[in-house]
Length: 161
Image: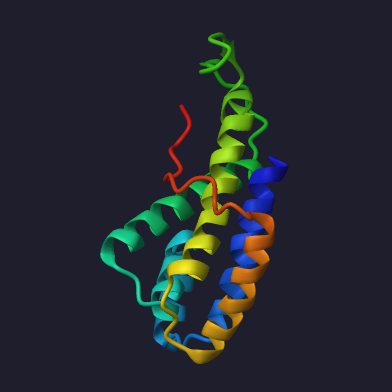
């Protein structure tokens, strides 16, 4: 849960920074508020306005963000209700759903998805604003320190069982 929350917080921090460099029409912000637009949809829209993204890249970004925030929401809005056990994919036994959803494999997928978003935008993204380009140059350097051999994976996060 902690790794998943940290991944979502990292994406939120990046989103908040990008949002300061993107002009959003007040009507769009109001629409998001009244329709309760999902966080991943809002982030996708802001990043599309901050970078020149191709449709395939936008779809992968949206899918990764959807999975990051789906698991984050499950961690934050836990239900105390007891539910039927589900099959744990690695242990091959029935467990309470939290043990299957918040296992190491899924945490690794989510952390890799979040860091891949930052890596991909820093190394392959084409910012629409000079201030974003300047920030991304610094981010690129910091990410190289974390991943000296490059980012380990570019897979889209897949939903758990």
